[in-house]
Length: 358
Image: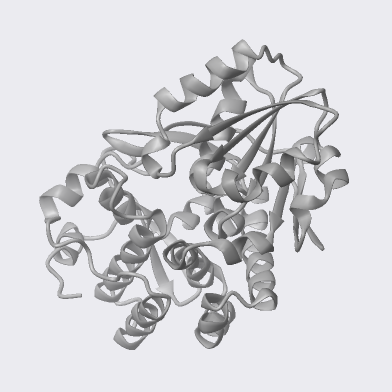
């Protein structure tokens, strides 16, 4: 088992990465302060792992809330339903919320923990690659609105993150690929050598080779932990983690969070950001091709939906959380492995992206 640390003064916490951690009752119990536990999971994950986790918590009063699978569950209605369950239990401020699942479950559970009785402890046990490398770390929690993704939420750090790599191998291939979109992102924003390594090892990850998975999760968490430690609330550097997300969130919102997985939309968004970076003279054409080809090898889409034109993209992007003084700020790439937040681009360059042949 490897241990990383997110350094946030008195709110610092560890990230555990290893095999068989769901059965490590001593580790899980270490982060439960009271006698009450609320586990939030989804139907797929609960069927596979809920019994194992609950089996480690026999001394506690445990209640589980099992959600249907899907991004559409990220709503205030879902949050209200979970809180009602907790109040009927009844649970108090000593309860620990456990998120057992992927990014959707983690976002919902974290938001519930942030607002139940003005804030309670929670533990992240991510079971997807996307959640283990990205969404479980950093304390961003929240739900969607019909007009925009993650528009309702809070920063609320977990007590710990427990990433059992054994859960990755139970994922459907589409979910595994979706997680690789966020993995590739880390190489593009900060570590060109990691991008090169991914180009050489993407098939190993698709084949769920444990050493490759472990190395990848640790590398991504290390990068994110450093960024979160320096900019917890996204006043600056943390925005770079949103490479491709402004375009990608527009796709997810347009399709009502149903047809596209988050990682699939992000992959397309990163390719669009790469094309824009090329038009600004920062990336070379062969570098954009390398980026696009790696996403294709990871079985991810690289072309925006045909039904989405410039008007549709701009309508959604104008509500993005990075909009400042009416200007859409975009994360673009100065070079492979170096990203920056840009607002002073020519409008015609952004417009041209929606008319580019991908």
